[in-house]
Length: 264
View 1 (spheres, helix red, strand yellow):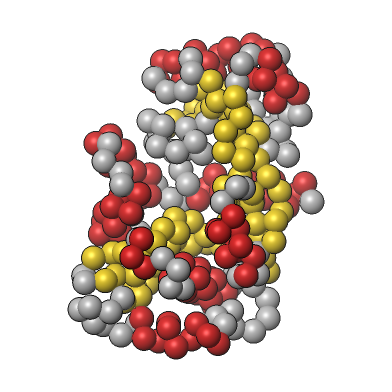
View 2 (cartoon, one colour):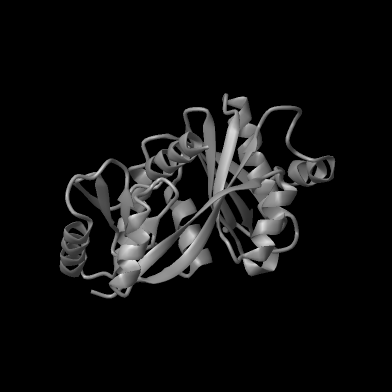
């Protein structure tokens, strides 16, 4: 089980590069102007040598210089003493996240009740939603993502396209357009025998109409066609609607991680 967790943790690092990184005694310090916790945190990726308290103090100095909170990702593969150490230094827990996985073995992954929706979505129309699949993230997809997430910070709008461009793996970029504008996004990242499902966002007007399921199923089917045998995704643990959707799509809980955060 620990081997599987280590594999997925490695895959997720490949799938979502940070704007800047620093390696430090088995830790990786990630910095992206606080765009997300995952891309702006300390992750434990190797065996440490230096004393834990000294390392935490060094990280606090580094993130203070970077001008963001000091954040540590706490996962099952990290040093079990880290969480208690951070708690004693006043770090708060934020963003419990569940990693879910599923096999891609077996028959076609699109349920019959989605097949008609998929076929109709593929037809070009000025008013009906249109499903689009591309081999890489492109500028219009990113602008659509910014609009869906209401991203207005000029620094984030500058660095995030560079972060997507730095993804070193093959991609499956999906979107749903309505009236010529992107109204939903999804992204698959292919790595080894896995596909990671990322960036599932749907506009309010298209929610609860099956488009999140459609995009995920499209990613899974395309990944399977390209040789993937397993899939993973990450969801905020208390996001009950998303959790329910992913279970319906065949995903099961694998493990959890969380973040310890402190203003420095």
